[in-house]
Length: 298
Image 1 (tube, rainbow, N blue to C red):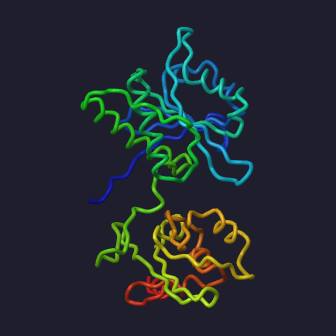
Image 2: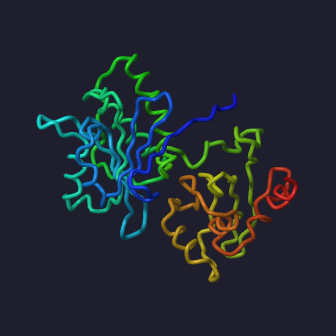
Image 3: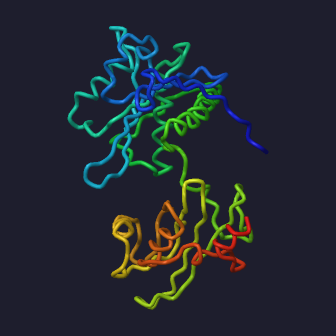
């Protein structure tokens, strides 16, 4: 079934793209704010940021440049303060100095109570962990609490809209790198119509037969979990690829333990074999058609 379009309203609160952004979606009670850490004080006095909400703190590790996120919740206090007050507290904490922007989810009708924000915090944290795009900084998994099936259905619908907004604001936090369609059946095409691609060659370095699978996505090229990776680097391997090979989850047998996204087919192929390679020629369909031929045919 063809997915319907969505109408999203982005309000640049400071008149610039890198400033504060307020985001709403047609026929949705949610209100979302994207707030740079340096602009928190400008949000004082906003009624919807004094409400209960769920928030995300985004940043980058100083040591390995990995993307990080912390998922939290904030209820309304006796003082009348809510989410903004909690963000200001995080700004003062030394162990939270990595984050550079916050994204806040609240509602236009102040309908979030303790039950709702606990459930959303738990689900958001779970979804971010499963997608494995960011390092989730929560040291303790949030509790989902106890909710009725009616409330669960309502909140899951809120989550569906939240995924759209989060991606629109620049963070594919909840989206898996691939739809997990693997070539373990006779179907070579996933639901998006892009073919599964294969690479197979005998390594001159280790003598092993290297076999990998992957596909192109609208973000780049994904090498699938379960691909066999050459463990020996060539002298000519690009530095960035060498670093990613060192950090990748690969077992002692050279099996990749998680899907990995690359900016190009050639970088993906270089990662697999540990050296320079033309990915447009190296990646082929099950019928032996190269990626280059596929793109030329299109």
